Length: 361
Image (cartoon, rainbow, N blue to C red):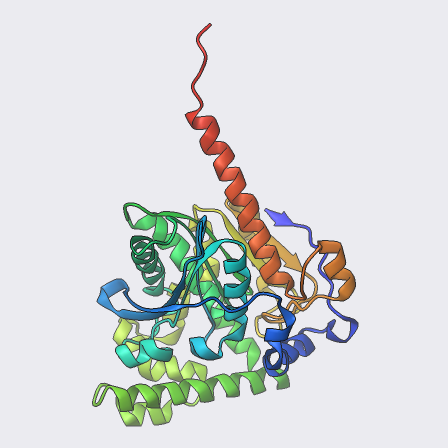
């Protein structure tokens, strides 16, 4: 289903590249002052993901928690610096959610625990489910929702699929919600390097991936070939030199096709919200048409498609905040928490009707 949106950014951010640059380079400087909610007191946990890969995470459980939100971030980074994800943690915790945030494979402290590289969702989907099971076992509410943004959004989509494929007792993976998920890496990377802004972004990400590879090399001695790391000078090159061989793929194209979030959408069988901006400068514009078609065919998907928003930006104008009755400018997280709340209420109503005894006349 394609949903209507009333989102509007400030006038100077009504451009995808401007919004993306503002969010990446400026908004994180004072993010803590934009929200009234304090940081939860997180407990540090090492979960066991798929294939017994150790996954580092943070867990916070408020009193009388009603549900659990599990999330991760995009292509590079680590929990400490992921202010946008930590913002969700504050907002969700204040609304009574247990919060689980984690460094996904080859990122942050997870990279220190294991040399296992990324798979763009092929194995991270199971990680989401395994993390949910362990979080519930330690006291988080059993109803769990998966979330993420950018490449982390693609991972969360794979988690939603894995929740159907895997039979895990005592947990209820209710669904998930994602912001600007990566859906077609093959098309988007090809598109990205044809534009000046895209080239700049790709170069920055490639540099961070190269740093990550060297960190893994120094932490896990002898596991990686230094010559291969030296050749990995682009996102494509990182996957070509370090990832696809370990996953059994013969080419980067084959790998991207297999992990594609777009191809995954018809297979989702749990409620899923996708927030996507038509002016996202990191993804090929034609993906919007395919995303709308796939969402229209799957009744479990709600697509909230906006004209503006950039890549994981969605800073709202004052007028937009008033219209939505939001407490702050973070429109995307506010919509995700609103949608999860509404979906949870619907599920409770359905469950109540199913258990209601029938009268005998």
